[in-house]
Amino acid sequence: MTKDLVLQRLRRSGGDYVSGGTLSAELSLSRTAVWKAVGQLRADGFVIESAPKKGYRLLAGGDALSESGVRLYLRRGELDVKVYKSISSTNTVLKQMAEGGAPEGTVLLAEEQTAGRGRMSRSFFSPPRSGLYMSVLLRPRLSAQISTRITACAAVAVAEAVEELTGARAEIKWVNDVLVDGKKVCGILTEGSIDCETGLLHYAIVGIGINIRPPEGDFPEELRPIAGALPAASGKDLRCRLAAAVLDRLMDFYDKLPGEDCYEAYRGRSCLLGRAINILPLGSEPIPATAIDVEPDFSLRVRLADGTEKILSSGEVSVRAK
Image (tube, rainbow, N blue to C red; front, top):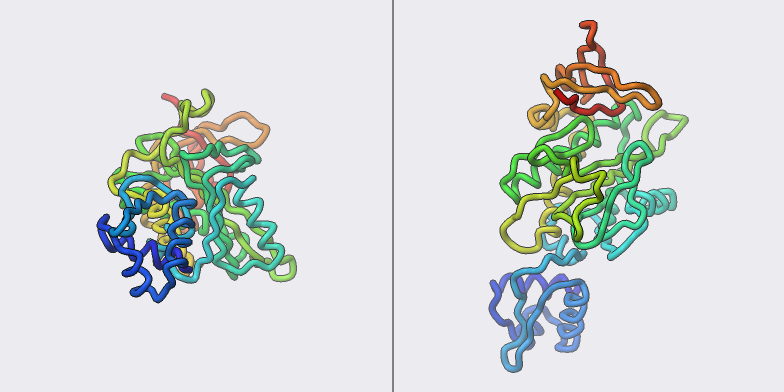
């Protein structure tokens, strides 16, 4: 796209002015096309200053989330990235697109979700200007029984990207939460459709919500004890860089499924091993246990109060207060 080319050239200038004539000549564009591209980039949220006889320069600061910005940092060129200012739910909309035949690698990102969804039919708090909300459409030839590996790969992808861009240690709470300093900064919801004839996934949608910074007015009271945000990160375009880093890593792991390439990274980041937990069955009282290990299939091995061990392949647990 034209605006992608203009953005890349302005980025290479390191904050110096680039004349309209230079942009036009180097990119084989008309002056009018350059002017329109700059206008589109500004509409996306990029801060571009213009001056007579000097041209344009991209200013530092700002954190615009745009297709151009994500593609600038994205290594996996086969991904089709679409960015929304506001959307009901990236998972909900992408499921509709998947049923309509959208190809693998379709990615929806949003600055805000008005009906964000989490696991167990919970809502997912997704206010504007504070988070990164995205969903990825995959069409794996995997059985539903091992589809949890996709969620595990996404958790490791987020943890590694967070560590790269912020320097903070990221941990994983089985099976789908990423924590920094003991607070949840990311939730992952993987949904799919199964081919009843083969037992294989028809498609899977990986939804990822990351709290970049605390929302205006802070988190709702009920979330404050558990929800957190990323520590401050240096550099600009954090949301675009983070989106690209997560997507690149997720697809790298996905290419190697059903292998266990992310297993050691997942297990090594577990915040549960050796800790007292509660198993939380739907509609039943919590069951006290101790988390023993994460198995190679990403199930959780626990020891119950009577000393027996049990394997949890799905469900939810919480850390038990001492």
